[in-house]
Length: 71
Image (cartoon, rainbow, N blue to C red; front, side, top):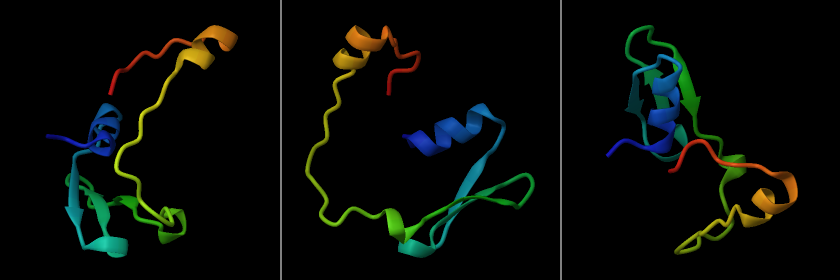
């Protein structure tokens, strides 16, 4: 199964190949060899949670926002 990052980058024409491990992980475009995605440890969560569930209801109600893509 493709990840969200792979799907998003594919939409703009990249074909990612993952290299490295942990904070050295990089997503490299197979065609150009350019690094497209890098892991930034500054954005790690201090403690991972088992499940995250979002609810767009408030944005729908207050802003009239509607999602276009369902992940």
